[in-house]
Structures are given as structure tokens and as C-alpha cells.
Image (cartoon, rainbow, N blue to C red; front, side, top):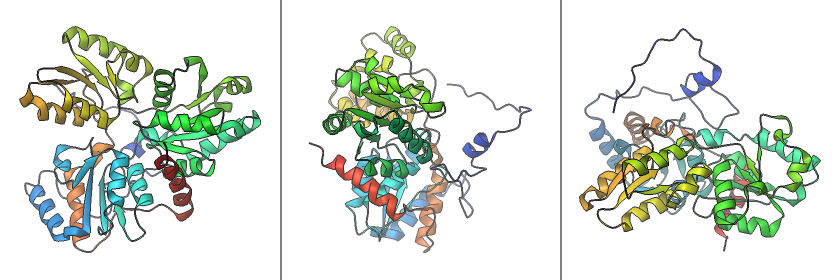
Length: 394
């Protein structure tokens, strides 16, 4: 595995590039960039000991959540690991913990704040840890989309269903308009419920999960789905196209899962005879259609746990998790490889590194609250309503 050396380019960074580098702020984005205080050096040999000491000093006052896509250096300090919704519920089940340190990304910390008590404080070690998918649907864009649906005369027939991987603002919009939240494991149940409430669904913000669930799991056709592009007038769709559609998919995607291609699947089958291809439903439709198994992060883990010794697997999800699973099951003779030849971590998830975690824990241990994620009361109320509808799904 080789890494290209950085090159000096005679270009001016765009505002977006500065935002991604953490050098500018966008108040309309779910990501923040401010990180007060001095971070310890990544080369500090005492980082592990410092994190352990700060965590021990805090005792039951702190509860550390680690998303499956986190670095190994961070995940070792997690009290529980899981996907975003599982972790938010785990936090709510620990009311004695004054501080919830969420090693994940911004929308996950928001969900934890929504589901935990007012006395608990949710901390994100690096406020710049956002989610490109969640950022692809802003509150202003979705409100404009609803105006387009209203002008087309179909808004009353549309039920919004928003993926867990969305900002609190989008969850609140969903709750306010009679919709529900879904995860990658219960998307089909959420859509079945939505079609009992209305004739059409506006699915936010991941087009691939919406399309794969509708077509692969529910038997709809690709023609039943239209793609709403928030960067085009009227979403790039005519009123007739909107009226004819069952699924109105938002033009959003996961930057990691969207990288996998049909060529990736064909290549790994050629390289590894007898390999099982297991992918996340955030992958493109043609990748999901060519895979042997499709499911959420938890499904991927459970499938590999149950797999026979000596079996071969190519996994289409984030690399930190794939590498961790490959190491975990190596002793059982299970061969587990990354689906693509190109190394691809979740870059924003990887912003939570050991120096940021040490800084957050030591600050809390000294009595200084840092990087608190707090959702305003009105947004929280409507977002919680949407989440409660999901929890009540049959």
C-alpha cells in the first residue's frame, strides 16, 4: 500500500476547501470548526496513559460512545460501540452519566442530545467531525423542496422519511410534516408505514438507501423513483414527473459507500474465487444488485460472526471497520478484504483522533465543559417526535 506525496499546487483554496480543512465556518452547515485550547501532540508517547487517567478520574460521570467507523486508537476507550442510533439509545440508558463523549460525527451527537436528559451534556471531541451526506440536505433546501411539492399539488400526499444520517433540522422537518426517521436496518418498515399514511415518500438525504429499499426490498421499479436535485430549479423535475413518482429521492449520498462500483465487485470476484460480496445499502443500486448480501453495519458484523471458518468475504463499507473485522476473525480462517482496491476511510469520522479525545477528557476532568452539542428546544421537540414514530414502528 503506497501513499501519494503531497504536492504544492499554485491554486487558491475555495471556501468549501477551507471549510473541509477546518479553517472557515459555515453557519448553515451542521459542522462546526472551533476547537478552543491546545491539543496535545500526536507524537506524545503518553497519550494513551493520559486518556486512561482522565477517564478514570471522571469515573461514572463520563460515558464514551464509539462508532464502528472510528480509529482503533479511539475505539479502545469506548464504553460501548455501535451504529449511530444504537449509540444514542445507549446514551439515553445511562442517566447517571453527566458527560456523553460521542466519538462519531455531528449528527450522531445531536441525536444523542435529543434522546438524553436535559442534565446530560453531549461532547464531540472535534466539532469539525461532520458528515458529507447529512450536509447535502439543509433546512432551507428542504423547505424549498416542500414548496415545489406544494406547487405541484402533491404535498398533502407526501410523507417524509429521513435517514438517521441527517441533521437535527432535517429530523425536525420530518417530525413537523408527519414523517418518521429510519435506519439502514429498518428502512423497509419505515417506508411501509409511510405508504400507509400517504401515496408518496420524500426520502432524505441518501438516494441510494431509498432506491435500494424501494426497488430491491419492496418490489418497486426504478421508474417509480425520481431524483430531486436541490441545486436545480424545481429539483430538476417537472410537476408531471413528481405526480407520477412514488419515491422522491433526495440527491445525497455517502462519500465512502458511493465510491464502490460494479467494477469493484467484478474485480474482487475475479481475484478471489468463491468470495462472498457483502455491502451496505448506502452503496449504489448496481453494486447492491450484484452483491450476495446487503445490510446495515450491525448486519455486516453479525453475518461475519456467523460465517463458517475458511469463508471468503469482500466488504463494501468503511475501511476502519473492515480492517478491524479482518483482524478479529483471522484466527477463524475467515478471509476478509475491502471491496475496493483504493483505501477509503471516512475522512470526517477520522477527525476524532486520540489527541482530540485526550483534550476533551482532560478538559472535562478539570471541570471545563468543551465542544458541547446542544439542540434548541423547538428543533428537539419535532425531531424527537419523528424519532418516536420510528421507535413505534411495527
